Length: 221
Figure (cartoon, rainbow, N blue to C red):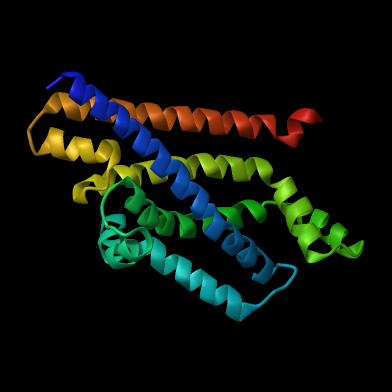
């Protein structure tokens, strides 16, 4: 089994896993970041409190986060096929990964933004700062370290989801582990793919934590 073909397959699996994880995390933030900001602004203590908007967003996030990823993967296959043109492979897996990541990101962004001191926000409001300025320069600016730590957590979670997608031919290392490790009873393949997955997670988390420390304003004081 350990011939050039298998080595090439593993390298392609690493490439597909990394690309799926990064793409899904990016699109997840495209959807989840605005949701997290909206939750922060419309909450009871926000600068634009709106019980109805917050309640709807909160309910949607709670429901979507309660759906196990494998079930979500199957449920959105028609939607995935509509978007990508097929319901299997690494490109198709980005769609359910994004949908799974977005509510998690929304909740994590909300948590990070709410860590910002109310005094700082009130000072910006008293000086007449507009909502956009408060969001991007005050909330996101002050919470950037926490937000970057959140990115590392999301990357690890999404990568784990991508491995689970291998059960239905989702591509990447998870697919290789299922097809060649589990179905063919090859423990060696299972162990190698596991080592690669753990290694990728550690590299991503290390890079994320380094970025968080670099942009931590407390280190510059």
